[in-house]
Length: 502
Image (cartoon, rainbow, N blue to C red; front, side, top):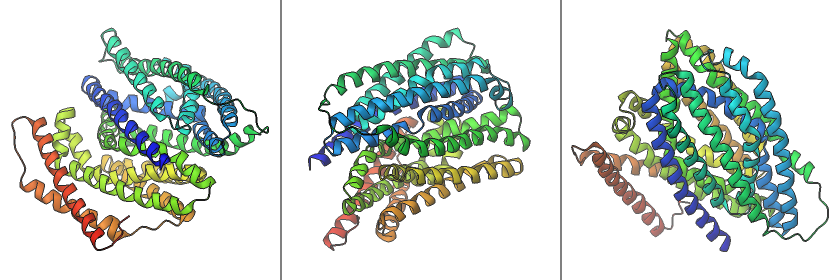
């Protein structure tokens, strides 16, 4: 009971903090999109894909290793073991952070000239290289705080990071020419780099204070290096392959869009509009799912160590149902109000069109995040990577052949195929590992029916107002009340008939 209480408290704290962070970040991203335009967002997105590949190499699975090892040591009441484990993880992350930094530094000129169309300075990637060792250590410490059930410290560091980034960028905007694509990207990367350095200093300070709580009572000497390598190396190898494919995929998209007849700036603009604007809006409500997922890894690691498969399957069943009813509400919201959201956020109806087309994928995106976290917790992290690699290979092939022929429509098809394939394979891997049971009618069809009825009723009593924001908030609140009424009625009827929904 105490563990459940701690889990729920952490989830609530993380959700509130994530809401604050993501809301602030979303508002700032919308501000940037309106200042620098979709082309600037598109180019920054390409640079960030290189950044994420570098981060993957720098991390090399160490976040998961730190979470798993510390969780497992604490599960057997070995506080000294947990303390040694995180120290080994920090050393490991520093080595790979430096390695990633050197690789990016020497490959930067080639990346800029070949994949970034030579439209930005190589200094952009040099700035990223500087931050990699510090970011790698920070990610290791994040794994520690998740394992010791103090993820709110990670959240506080995220707040410090995003506030620093916003302040730096806002202070530097007057000193840069926002009509110059190169200067825009340098500005954004500089803000990101400085925020990562501050994040490292703050997180390390929290770790020094927190680690004093762990007792130094020595136990039998353990080979943590081999355990770190066993967890991190398969993840590192498959993560680098996955991230490399993903980076290649992102860099390939504008190139193949140009082959369909689009100009370079138009291709970058379309890429920025879909990836940097529409998909960002769709993922934003998932911060609640992200908060839960980050806490699932240590919980399922404990279930796995104790071989408590009954509890594991019960939690999986409950999580699936909750994610489905939440996702359905978000899908309904975007289906009915995509144009209003687009106009309020970006003053561009074209973004609303992409939100409307892509919003059914919300269910797959959110479910896949939960499934991946569970698989990592039960030591199936390599399976997760295999799923992602298979998805990326197919996506790259489709992008290469489909985009020159079908343009933007082809890219949208690729996104749908990718999400469907990834979630399907991940779900199958979870079923193989746990044999969880899912009732299609009770847990999917009936909530879907509740969604459809709620949308019909909400649309028929739509409230109009001259203020678009007020109109959106009013009608969304009305839709939420109606939807929760039907979901609650369904659960109540099921309970009275002794039908177990989850």
